[in-house]
Length: 339
Ligand SMILES: *Cc1c(COP(=O)(O)O)cnc(C)c1O
Image 1 (cartoon, rainbow, N blue to C red):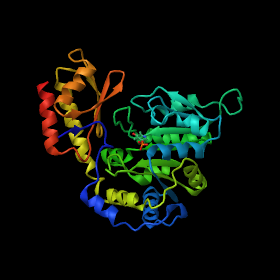
Image 2 (image 1 turned 30 degrees about the vertical axis):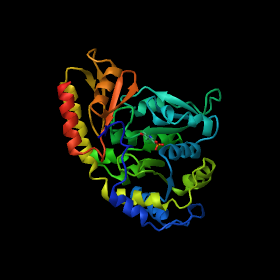
Image 3 (image 1 turned 180 degrees about the vertical axis):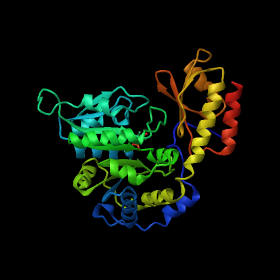
């Protein structure tokens, strides 16, 4: 059996989740007649204290829609150099919205309010792109599942307000951060204009993301989603998985965090590792010393039926998730200890 630690997106729906999906009441969501999607959107909006939420087939599409809602062509978004919207959305910021990214050199994907302040182009200086949006990620993916300091988020929020900038959160793994730091959806809802969350990461759904925001910003979201090809019909079968996951799969994220921490500790003590990023949630990023080349190491693990991925620049990543069982964990710990 393969032990797949490449990502928390590799999970398969449980029997209980599939049961919820198979028995969902559905309708045509393009006519807003899918009651399960409507219920999911209402629930997530309410959790974040926002008036509107919209179901999306992917987190990328939810983020891309948010970028479009906040900007006009030629504008600039401030984000970290590790940002998913910059690195892993196929160049969509420029393709879909015609905007550029001002990249900040943060720490593990996180930056400070004063870095943001310095990066805002003065609106009257027409030679520069107009800054209209600040985007952050929590937890940071390329930053190794690191969690933001909420006080810094509030400082950036104030700055955005002063400079009339939108503030978007890529919360693909926000629930991991909430569980790790004992924070709430409501406090995040109050800090951001828009938030995207993924149901298909730690929450274990096969498909689905949600974008939340208040009416003023969200009123055009349905048009943008349509343009991007994300208007779905009887998508309630998928939304049902989301409703199930919100009910059953959030608290258990703690287990993923514990296992990730244990893997990080094993790696720290091993003879082949140069550096392990501090483990805060379910992602472990580490670098090898000269004992193994990256390819050799991936092959050694692969021979033991363990899959992890390379993030480039000598960084390797492993991610724990709900299909990573206690037995698998024991085996991985054992393999790593013997390398
Ligand atoms: C996974 C992820 C997304 C969304 O990716 P999809 O594959 O489109 O669902 C967005 N942001 C971050 C940080 C992610 O890790």
